[in-house]
Structures are given as C-alpha cells and as structure tokens.
Length: 72
Image 1 (tube, helix red, strand yellow):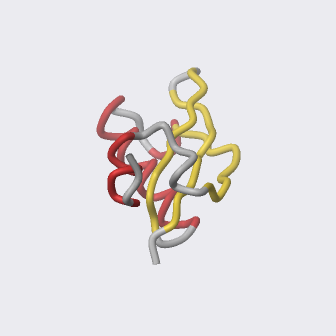
Image 2: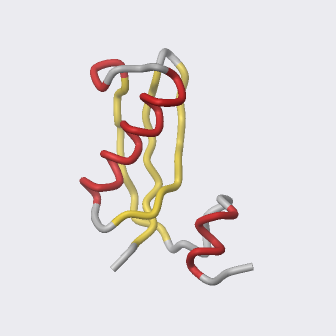
C-alpha cells in the first residue's frame, strides 16, 4: 500500500523537505536520493537525510500526490 512520507535533510548546504509517495520509509529515502541526485547532480554522500515522517497524503502541498490519493 502506498503511503505519504515527508523527508527532511540537507543537500549542497541547503535544507529541504520533500513529500513523496512510497511503499515504506526506505523506499521514500531511495526516491529522495534519486530525485535530488538527478535534480542537483548530488551524489548520495552529498545528501544528508535528517528525518522521515509518515504523513497523510491529504496533508501534502504536492498537487500530483494529492491527485494520486484522490484529493482535489
């Protein structure tokens, strides 16, 4: 079952928080590494994950995740 996760951390000296839909916490972390590595050209060693929180997909500001969950 797909769940929502909010991942907090630092990449290239900048703080971030990203909402992702994933099967579990480890899957969410992998998606963030992939996304940030692609977007910023950062290696995994350059991305520091501080914490991961499970969220209700209705809480997200990400429009795509809301649509996947069936929200407006």
